[in-house]
Image (cartoon, rainbow, N blue to C red):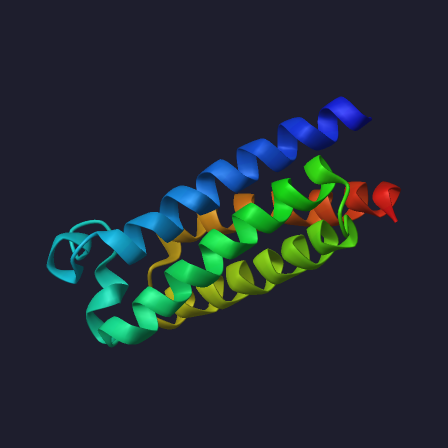
Length: 121
């Protein structure tokens, strides 16, 4: 069970970290080809979402790895579920049904991570 937890946490963290770093580091004009919805968001809001995603990815891995406040991994996974719910609602409100699949997959991964992270409490 522990190996499954680390594999899922690593996969989820890598995907969320990539998305977050892109939002923080890549200029908005270049992001528009990948994330059309970003056009409607102010730069500061987009960067803030990226920072939250980076912190969520770090929160999945670092606390259980160090043994310091491992319950933060549960909080990080819960936050990532909320981010994905927001992403799904954003895409659906824009009629982007075809791109919701990735958000649903990340939501499921984060939900499983919440369930598995309860072993650390």
